[in-house]
Amino acid sequence: MRKVLSFSGFLMLGLVISQFLPMIAGEGYGVVKSISNVLLYVCLSFIMINVGREFVLDKSRWKSYAEDYFIAMATAALPWFMIAIYYVFILLPPDYWNSWEAWKENLLLSRFAAPTSAGILFTMLAAIGLKSSWIYKKIQVLAIFDDLDTIILMIPLQIMMIGLRWQLIIVVVIVFLLLSIGWQRLNKYDWRRQDWKAILFYSVIIFLATQILYLGSKELYGEAGSIHIEVLLPAFVLGMIMKHKEHDTPVERSVATGISFLFMFLVGMSMPHFIGVNFAETHAGTHSVTGSQEMMSWGMILFHVVIVSLLSNLGKLCPMFFYRDRKLSERLALSIGMFTRGEVGAGIIFIGIFVLWVKKLALRSVTKKGTTIRS
Image (cartoon, rainbow, N blue to C red):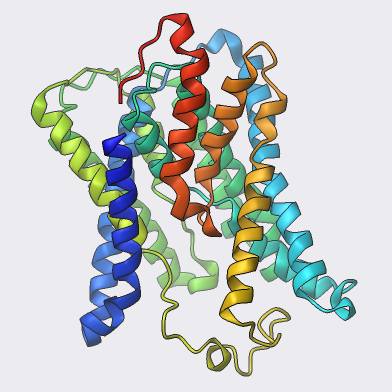
């Protein structure tokens, strides 16, 4: 419990600093922000490689994984549709309810109600000792499929916004190629170096590879034609193909914990700057439907943030209605574990509370089966 609260504390500390960083850094804000983002993605890659190394698949149960995929797709899509409907029918005047431009714009905005934050999720769940539980292993599968669905569901949105481009097809090909390699080469490569130094080195290489692809395509075709692959999936697949070697030493544990703390802090640092920003001036002259609306008061913004968080989390309850061979408390814990997937809304503030809730529910079922959960 102490570690979970510490993770939440580092997250909140980063969030607070992110709001005052422009004033503190001054003209060097851009450089500081870039360094922060580089460290964030390297830490995420480190965490996801280790998650992939511990990932176990029974290839004979491929039908079960197909079911998991569609459950994850529903879990990714439900918050998206629910929040898009809320944005259009609640935040926009009735004149826009039948506007294709309004729907297209808000479908894109609402997609970010369920973005990737698997690093936070796995870090928190591991901190409360759930690594050996059914909940953790199932969330491993659902969270990765959720990320995959987030990428895939962005494709038709991008086509609606900018038209069909060959770069989008390249992204899809790369994603499915990585998944195919992970499935076919699962635990195949017996690499001798799998200590924290080696994993950190691999993390840097993955970050550089994704950045070179992005910056190279951006240089050739511009920002709109760039190919952007997040580090999460390549790092996870790299971990999958490694034949896992256990390095359970005090140094390994300390480094892994330290990188997790740094990651949580950097996630908070990555939050957009909103304190002291004049949004009325920022959106002045904008041609977007949503941006052209009158600026709301801070109290009304807070109200809508809470509602969006509730809708997002209600959509994430989808797994609770499946896996009927498991107890309701386990299915509810599984669904609540997915709450932390969203980075939009008030939910990010309560990540620690969500995880402790998962632990409480897990204790009702897991401990009865003889599994010990450490705090």
